[in-house]
Image (cartoon, rainbow, N blue to C red; front, side, top):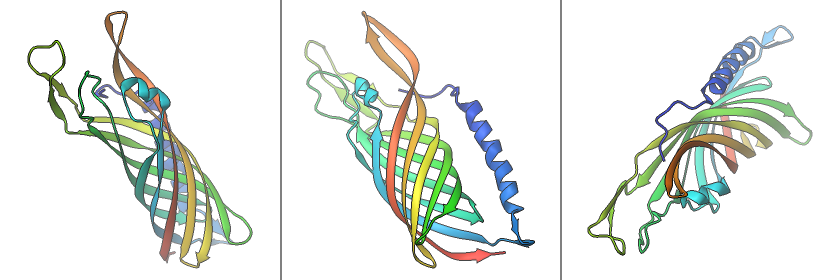
Length: 229
Protein backbone atom coordinates (compact mmCIF):
# COMPACT_ATOMS: atom_id res chain seq x y z
CA UNK A 1 0.00 0.00 0.00
CA UNK A 2 1.18 3.50 -0.69
CA UNK A 3 0.03 7.05 -0.05
CA UNK A 4 1.56 9.15 -2.78
CA UNK A 5 -1.65 11.05 -3.61
CA UNK A 6 -2.98 13.85 -1.43
CA UNK A 7 -5.56 12.70 1.06
CA UNK A 8 -9.07 14.12 0.82
CA UNK A 9 -8.69 14.74 4.55
CA UNK A 10 -6.26 17.57 3.73
CA UNK A 11 -9.06 20.14 3.89
CA UNK A 12 -10.02 18.87 7.34
CA UNK A 13 -6.39 19.04 8.47
CA UNK A 14 -6.11 22.62 7.24
CA UNK A 15 -9.31 23.49 9.11
CA UNK A 16 -7.89 21.99 12.29
CA UNK A 17 -4.65 23.89 11.75
CA UNK A 18 -6.47 27.21 11.47
CA UNK A 19 -8.52 26.31 14.53
CA UNK A 20 -5.36 25.61 16.48
CA UNK A 21 -3.79 28.91 15.45
CA UNK A 22 -6.95 30.81 16.37
CA UNK A 23 -7.27 29.16 19.74
CA UNK A 24 -3.57 29.59 20.40
CA UNK A 25 -4.03 33.33 19.88
CA UNK A 26 -6.96 33.33 22.31
CA UNK A 27 -4.97 31.29 24.81
CA UNK A 28 -2.00 33.63 24.72
CA UNK A 29 -4.34 36.56 25.31
CA UNK A 30 -6.21 34.80 28.13
CA UNK A 31 -6.28 36.87 31.29
CA UNK A 32 -7.85 36.41 34.67
CA UNK A 33 -8.52 39.43 36.87
CA UNK A 34 -6.49 41.58 34.50
CA UNK A 35 -3.33 39.48 34.97
CA UNK A 36 -1.94 37.19 32.29
CA UNK A 37 -1.92 33.56 33.41
CA UNK A 38 1.46 31.81 33.40
CA UNK A 39 2.41 29.39 30.63
CA UNK A 40 3.22 25.97 32.08
CA UNK A 41 5.57 23.67 30.17
CA UNK A 42 5.52 19.90 30.57
CA UNK A 43 7.10 16.69 29.33
CA UNK A 44 5.12 13.45 29.43
CA UNK A 45 6.41 9.97 28.56
CA UNK A 46 3.65 7.40 28.10
CA UNK A 47 2.89 3.81 27.14
CA UNK A 48 -0.24 1.97 26.12
CA UNK A 49 -1.74 -0.02 23.27
CA UNK A 50 -2.59 0.48 19.60
CA UNK A 51 -5.70 -1.27 18.29
CA UNK A 52 -5.88 -1.46 14.50
CA UNK A 53 -8.89 -1.49 12.20
CA UNK A 54 -10.10 -5.08 11.80
CA UNK A 55 -10.48 -4.56 8.05
CA UNK A 56 -6.68 -4.40 7.75
CA UNK A 57 -6.82 -8.17 8.13
CA UNK A 58 -8.00 -8.21 4.50
CA UNK A 59 -4.50 -7.00 3.60
CA UNK A 60 -2.79 -9.58 5.84
CA UNK A 61 -2.00 -7.22 8.72
CA UNK A 62 -1.77 -8.55 12.26
CA UNK A 63 -4.48 -6.48 13.99
CA UNK A 64 -3.94 -7.75 17.52
CA UNK A 65 -3.31 -5.10 20.19
CA UNK A 66 0.26 -3.78 19.98
CA UNK A 67 2.39 -1.92 22.50
CA UNK A 68 2.58 1.81 21.81
CA UNK A 69 5.09 4.15 23.48
CA UNK A 70 5.57 7.88 23.08
CA UNK A 71 6.47 11.23 24.52
CA UNK A 72 4.78 14.61 24.54
CA UNK A 73 5.99 18.17 25.02
CA UNK A 74 3.20 20.52 26.10
CA UNK A 75 2.39 24.12 26.98
CA UNK A 76 -0.70 25.11 28.94
CA UNK A 77 -2.17 28.50 29.80
CA UNK A 78 -5.38 28.53 31.75
CA UNK A 79 -7.86 25.98 30.44
CA UNK A 80 -6.16 25.49 27.04
CA UNK A 81 -3.08 23.50 26.11
CA UNK A 82 -1.07 22.63 23.02
CA UNK A 83 1.29 19.68 22.77
CA UNK A 84 3.64 18.10 20.25
CA UNK A 85 3.75 14.31 20.43
CA UNK A 86 5.61 11.38 18.90
CA UNK A 87 4.54 7.73 19.26
CA UNK A 88 5.88 4.39 18.05
CA UNK A 89 4.34 0.95 17.65
CA UNK A 90 4.74 -2.00 15.31
CA UNK A 91 2.88 -4.95 13.84
CA UNK A 92 3.52 -7.43 11.01
CA UNK A 93 2.08 -7.96 7.54
CA UNK A 94 2.37 -11.33 5.80
CA UNK A 95 3.14 -11.53 2.08
CA UNK A 96 0.23 -13.80 1.11
CA UNK A 97 2.60 -15.97 -0.94
CA UNK A 98 2.01 -19.71 -0.28
CA UNK A 99 4.84 -21.24 1.71
CA UNK A 100 6.39 -17.90 2.68
CA UNK A 101 7.49 -17.88 6.30
CA UNK A 102 8.78 -14.31 6.49
CA UNK A 103 6.32 -11.62 7.65
CA UNK A 104 7.85 -8.13 7.46
CA UNK A 105 7.60 -5.94 10.53
CA UNK A 106 5.57 -2.75 10.03
CA UNK A 107 7.04 0.15 12.01
CA UNK A 108 4.26 2.60 12.91
CA UNK A 109 5.30 6.18 13.76
CA UNK A 110 2.97 9.09 14.54
CA UNK A 111 3.92 12.75 14.97
CA UNK A 112 1.11 15.10 15.89
CA UNK A 113 -0.12 18.32 17.42
CA UNK A 114 -2.73 18.20 20.18
CA UNK A 115 -5.17 20.94 21.19
CA UNK A 116 -7.03 20.38 24.48
CA UNK A 117 -9.55 22.04 26.78
CA UNK A 118 -9.12 21.23 30.47
CA UNK A 119 -11.73 21.23 33.24
CA UNK A 120 -10.72 21.01 36.91
CA UNK A 121 -12.49 18.44 39.07
CA UNK A 122 -12.44 17.75 42.82
CA UNK A 123 -9.70 15.73 44.59
CA UNK A 124 -6.89 16.94 42.31
CA UNK A 125 -8.48 15.52 39.17
CA UNK A 126 -8.76 17.22 35.80
CA UNK A 127 -10.58 16.11 32.66
CA UNK A 128 -9.66 17.14 29.14
CA UNK A 129 -11.00 16.77 25.62
CA UNK A 130 -9.16 17.62 22.46
CA UNK A 131 -8.28 17.14 18.82
CA UNK A 132 -5.14 15.67 17.34
CA UNK A 133 -3.75 16.11 13.83
CA UNK A 134 -0.46 14.94 12.38
CA UNK A 135 1.34 12.47 10.14
CA UNK A 136 1.41 8.71 10.20
CA UNK A 137 4.58 7.11 8.78
CA UNK A 138 4.84 3.40 8.00
CA UNK A 139 8.06 1.56 7.17
CA UNK A 140 8.55 -2.17 6.52
CA UNK A 141 11.53 -4.22 7.69
CA UNK A 142 12.84 -5.76 5.54
CA UNK A 143 11.74 -3.57 2.65
CA UNK A 144 12.61 -6.12 -0.05
CA UNK A 145 12.03 -9.87 -0.11
CA UNK A 146 12.91 -12.51 -2.68
CA UNK A 147 10.66 -15.53 -2.22
CA UNK A 148 9.95 -18.80 -3.99
CA UNK A 149 6.43 -20.12 -4.49
CA UNK A 150 5.08 -23.52 -5.55
CA UNK A 151 4.52 -23.75 -9.31
CA UNK A 152 6.50 -20.56 -10.03
CA UNK A 153 9.90 -20.69 -11.74
CA UNK A 154 12.42 -18.35 -10.17
CA UNK A 155 11.89 -16.07 -7.21
CA UNK A 156 9.16 -13.51 -6.57
CA UNK A 157 10.48 -10.09 -5.55
CA UNK A 158 8.30 -8.22 -3.05
CA UNK A 159 9.09 -4.54 -2.38
CA UNK A 160 7.52 -2.44 0.39
CA UNK A 161 7.73 1.32 -0.08
CA UNK A 162 7.53 3.66 2.89
CA UNK A 163 4.09 5.20 3.39
CA UNK A 164 2.91 8.45 4.96
CA UNK A 165 -0.61 9.72 5.53
CA UNK A 166 -2.49 12.43 7.41
CA UNK A 167 -3.99 11.21 10.66
CA UNK A 168 -6.40 12.98 12.96
CA UNK A 169 -9.13 12.43 15.53
CA UNK A 170 -10.59 13.24 18.95
CA UNK A 171 -9.28 12.33 22.39
CA UNK A 172 -10.49 12.24 25.99
CA UNK A 173 -8.38 12.06 29.11
CA UNK A 174 -8.20 12.30 32.87
CA UNK A 175 -5.27 13.47 34.99
CA UNK A 176 -4.59 13.26 38.72
CA UNK A 177 -2.19 15.62 40.46
CA UNK A 178 0.04 13.55 42.78
CA UNK A 179 2.52 16.41 43.33
CA UNK A 180 2.50 20.13 42.47
CA UNK A 181 4.74 19.31 39.49
CA UNK A 182 3.66 15.75 38.64
CA UNK A 183 0.39 14.38 37.18
CA UNK A 184 -0.67 10.87 36.27
CA UNK A 185 -2.47 10.96 32.92
CA UNK A 186 -4.78 8.44 31.25
CA UNK A 187 -6.02 9.07 27.73
CA UNK A 188 -8.01 7.44 24.95
CA UNK A 189 -7.85 8.43 21.27
CA UNK A 190 -9.54 7.56 18.00
CA UNK A 191 -7.66 8.22 14.76
CA UNK A 192 -8.63 8.21 11.10
CA UNK A 193 -6.21 7.80 8.21
CA UNK A 194 -6.20 6.67 4.56
CA UNK A 195 -4.07 4.22 2.61
CA UNK A 196 -3.90 3.23 -1.04
CA UNK A 197 -4.85 -0.45 -1.31
CA UNK A 198 -4.77 -3.15 -3.97
CA UNK A 199 -6.69 -6.44 -3.93
CA UNK A 200 -7.95 -9.09 -6.33
CA UNK A 201 -11.63 -9.34 -7.23
CA UNK A 202 -13.12 -11.56 -9.99
CA UNK A 203 -9.69 -12.07 -11.50
CA UNK A 204 -8.88 -8.35 -11.64
CA UNK A 205 -6.61 -6.21 -9.46
CA UNK A 206 -8.59 -3.38 -7.84
CA UNK A 207 -6.75 -0.30 -6.59
CA UNK A 208 -8.55 2.15 -4.35
CA UNK A 209 -7.99 4.55 -1.49
CA UNK A 210 -9.60 3.40 1.75
CA UNK A 211 -10.15 4.94 5.16
CA UNK A 212 -9.16 3.13 8.33
CA UNK A 213 -9.57 3.72 12.04
CA UNK A 214 -7.20 3.05 14.93
CA UNK A 215 -7.83 3.23 18.66
CA UNK A 216 -5.19 4.14 21.22
CA UNK A 217 -5.09 4.27 25.00
CA UNK A 218 -2.16 5.25 27.17
CA UNK A 219 -1.00 5.92 30.72
CA UNK A 220 1.71 8.49 31.35
CA UNK A 221 3.41 10.81 33.79
CA UNK A 222 3.35 14.55 33.07
CA UNK A 223 6.15 16.52 34.71
CA UNK A 224 5.67 20.30 34.60
CA UNK A 225 8.30 22.10 36.69
CA UNK A 226 8.65 25.09 34.36
CA UNK A 227 6.38 28.11 33.98
CA UNK A 228 6.62 31.79 33.14
CA UNK A 229 4.33 34.80 32.78
